[in-house]
Length: 198
Image (cartoon, rainbow, N blue to C red; front, side, top):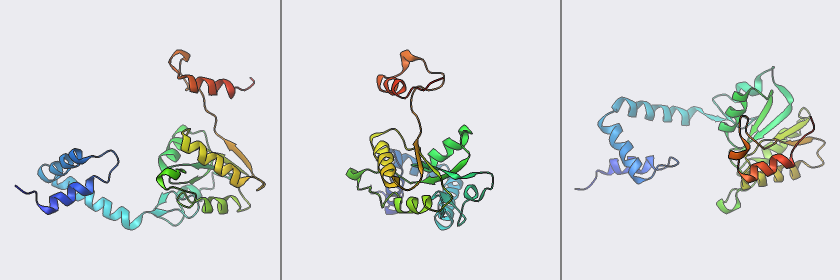
């Protein structure tokens, strides 16, 4: 028996999601069609609405429905401090930690030449313009501590070199509440290297 073309298209469409292989996509499609028509309609409607209304903020590059997002318009933020993160999820984590009161720039990725992601793909031209607005005094690099994240932070620091800006990098080390015996040697070594006086 041949699967209907529209069902094959649905299964194939669901495979675009990260971590969803052919069998997972098939299970999702069958679930939506067999057990949750309302959920399927809501999903389709939400996706359609998001694709029509969500855009990138002109200042921080994060997702928003407005030209400039609410965070960038806030008068309570320190506009002289700009934190560069890889993804919107990283911005959310920074906000949930309640440890940062400046503004952001979201790269929407990280440098990865093997994957064809270069400076243009992560909007470094927009970041450079943003840092040269006369308001930003410090750029805090908060990319991930992966090979690509480190390369991205290094590239940005070189890009901003001699631009009359303070460029900092978030520290790395032991997690709060962590025990030395359970920490990997790389993290422990970095914590020792980046120790500070108390």
